[in-house]
Image (cartoon, rainbow, N blue to C red; front, side, top):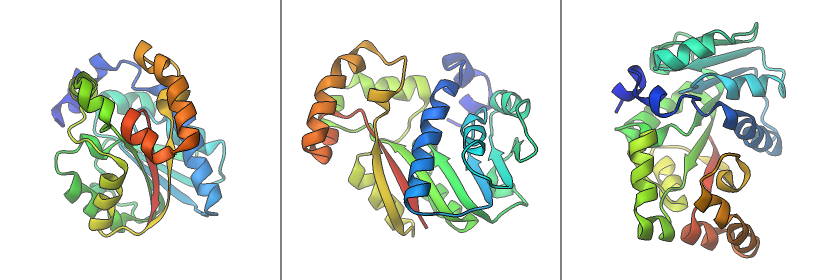
Length: 230
């Protein structure tokens, strides 16, 4: 699947590279950092796309060095044009970087795209003190019954692996991570330009989530998991 990012396939399917979602994602990241009083000076993002998450975080925190790593030439060119004095972008794997270790590493909507996601997560662990993962929880009762939401994710955005909360946390634990904090994020409810079916489900998801978060996510889906780990 790496080829779809290195050629133009992913860019053709997703011409905006989800730039419109970056402010919302940066807000979720900032909240979990502040909640846990994490201090940092060197921040990096693995699979940074066009760089907008890092650039939004630059407005919220006074870190001195930001590093974005991307394997897609198309996304990298767009990110490179936005570089600042504090944030730089690199067309390379973070595993080839000479800048490690970092204080905080962002892995936002990445591991579901990686063929060997367990080996990938294990190799990331020593590269930063703190890691923040954002993992879509694609597996729910309604997604399994309908089938096509999962198949569309595979075809259009390259998801190879599908998680629910417990399997995501168990994966990180088995890779040697210590979970500090985690929280649901409600992209299907809060992000713009959602499919008609997601718009229709906003009211029941929001109402039931207020009563029982875990059960709502397990049955109706529409949420991701934000994880802060060491």
